[in-house]
Length: 353
Image 1: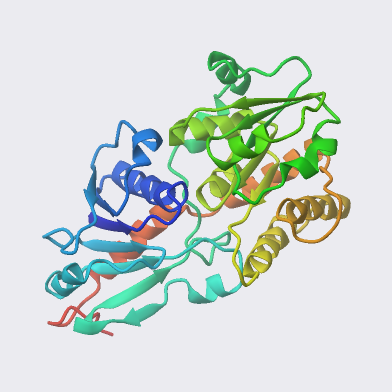
Image 2: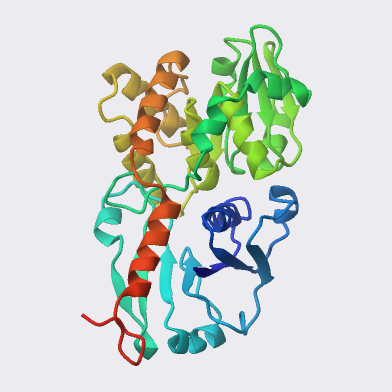
């Protein structure tokens, strides 16, 4: 199939990161993808080598002159109006790829149609954590790559090796994070903090000198190397959506800095994920992980406390095993589009009942 994937950059690490991974995943499965984006500058470090069968196009008022078999608008961004006007003649499968959430409405809303002018139908496709959703991005072979990976050797090769007895923590967060509140916990064991560029580096530079804590500032990493960073750490502090998903595939303890919303709904979104993540976990561990996740997001007034890392790691891997048993997002999206592409249509392009 031929895909046009439209992306407007709000946070270039998240929106573009998800779209680039999806484009590469579809292309690796044999499809041709045009990624139409209004700001592709982050791809210079995120994916400097590009990817076979993926073409990056600038966002224009006209959009691509031809219409693909499947049109994906990421996170509710509307394709250019002139492009939409050309769509009825091609009758593509039109998909709105939504944000990831563990909330219950996702299962109810996934796959629902929305009639559009010109006889077209827009379909809502929701990533998620259950078999009733669109799943999570996971390219074929990811776990095989990880299984043969030596994280400590990789860190050493880049000059980021921990000293004997040091645990390694990656830090990727938003501007309002408060790592200073965690110093007493982090300093209980010698710790190497690996700061990603941007907010994490700025915040860790401002920390007071603390015995037992060492900070190393990382360069910009490609997506592949960011995955390897997560595989190499004892604890990963991640944010948004893309790194959040990749940290779950890493199978290590993780704290999720959820994107803050002014009306506070991000708290419910965090709790919904924690409810799924911790179902069946030891009650003590579950309470400890929930408290830590909420404290990292400044929800509640309890003193930040790190859960037991070995027990936490074991549970994260149990959680990951459950996710691995589900179909991944790329394969589900392709099947979803192929089935609707093959369905009978009227002269206007609308699906026939």
